[in-house]
Image (tube, rainbow, N blue to C red; front, side):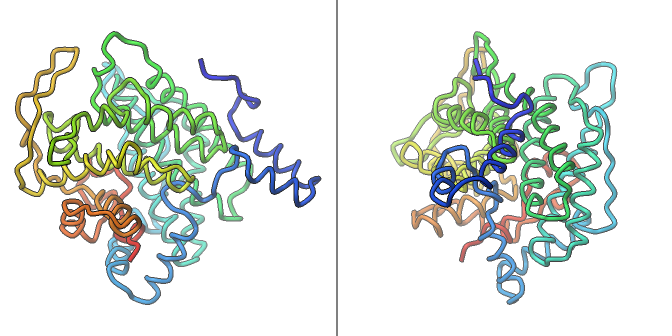
Length: 403
C-alpha cells in the first residue's frame, strides 16, 4: 500500500509549506533542508539548466551538430507561434465501443508545448514561453479523464511523462502564474498518476502479460510527475519498480538475458523492432531523468541497459545477433528474433550514445553508429502523423549532444 502523504493532491502543498518555512530559517538550517531527499533539481527531467546553457551557446556559435538539430526544431510546425491548442475533457485511446479515439489531439499539443518550450530556452524569446504555457493551461483547465480500452494506460504513460517534461521546463518562466502551474500539477496528480499507479500495482497471475514498453511508459510518467510535483514518494515508486518490479519494465526483465558476447536481449525483440526500439527510447528517457536527479539507472546492474541498447541497435543496423527463445505465462512463444519493423529510425539514439560514450567514456559502438545514421534527430511531426512518431519527444541532436 502506498504511504499516506501530507497533501492529498500530492507534493504541491508540501513544497509550498517547505518554501514558507525557509523564510524563517537560518542559512545553516536551509542547508540541512536542501540536503534532504525531498528536494529535487529544477529543471531536472530530461534537461537541466546546464543543458539549456550548452544548447544556447552552441546554436549562437553556429556549431554542429547542434545547429542542424536546432534547424530541425525550428522548421517543425509544432514549434511555431501559430499553433493553437485543442483540449478536451476526455482523451480516448483504444476503442471502448462507444467513443471515437481522439488521443491524437493530445500528443500533437504536447509536441507543440515541448517544442516551443525549447525555443524559449534557447532564444529567450518570451513569445515561445507564452505559447507553451497557453497550450498547457488550456489542457489543465479541461482534461478530466483518459478513457478507451486498455490502451488508455499507454496514453496515460506516454503523454504523462512528455507533458510533465514540458511543464518542468516552463516552471522556470516567471510569467507562468503560480495558480496555473499548480492546476497543471493537480492534473498530473489527479488524471495521469492514478492510472499510472494502478497499472504498476496491478495484481494478476501473469505479470509478464504486458510487454516492456507498457510498464516503461508508465514508470516514466510516475517518475516525471514526482519531480514536477516535488513528490518523493512517486519518484521512489518508479525507481523501485525499475530495480525490482514484477513486470517487464523492470531492468532485469526488459533486458532479460545477457549473451556470452555481452549483448543483452531485449524483451520485445521477438515481437517486432518498432516496439523494441520504443523500449530503448523509453528506458533511455527514464535513465536520463533519474540521472538528472542524482540516481544512476544507466549504470545499474553493471550497465545492463547499455547491453540491451547495443543489442537492439546492432540488429536494427543489419547485424546478426544471438537470440534465446522467449516465452511467457500467457502462451507467447518466440523462437526467432522478429524482422518486423527492422531498421526503425526513432529519434532516441543521441541520448543513449552521448551518455555512455561522451559522458561516461564507455564503448557503445552500435549506439554510436545508429546515432550517426539518424542525426540530426527531429521531434513529433518529423516521423509521420501516426502515434508512433510521437512516442518520444525527440530533438536529441540539439538537446543531448555533449561534444
